[in-house]
Length: 227
Image (cartoon, rainbow, N blue to C red):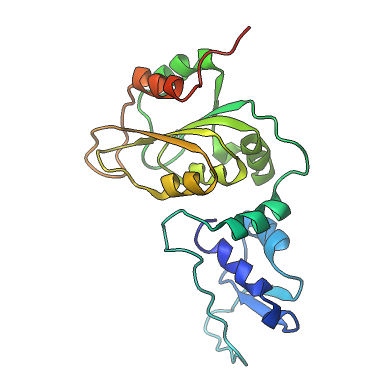
């Protein structure tokens, strides 16, 4: 979503407009990959799943570069405009969703006191979301209307691509801050905040100080909603 998918943008360059291009994708696309390929690939591109133990002769090989430094999380505004025009819902935003991303089904970086965090943020209107249970279409709709997002560091925060100007509180398992979603937030005008635990590794599961997270939200203007 952040590194490889944006590379498709470069295939829209006018010099390739009259060229039949085959996109080599070993194993073929997943359902999510197919969803985005259909929206982002130009009409002259088709997907080819290479067969094992088979050699292919290419008349011309296009090695598509990354738009930004790999793993940085930042995306340039011209790509974001291209992406949003093709992917986002064609309606006005309703910035009302306060989302608590759950990693209870993930193999790492789970919040060990997630129930406590849910109870602390529930009065603020936060609803827990297990993204593995949602289709890509449902995730886009959910985050398109995001007002605030709280989450452990993880791939679920990629959904910030569909939001605009949201408050983001990212929880890191240790003292090191991984800046991927800070840079993404900067590109999308989100108000990025972070909180760090004392885990031993970047993939440690950890306990969150729910009161500290609530204070970060309050300082960013996310408090109880009026009755």
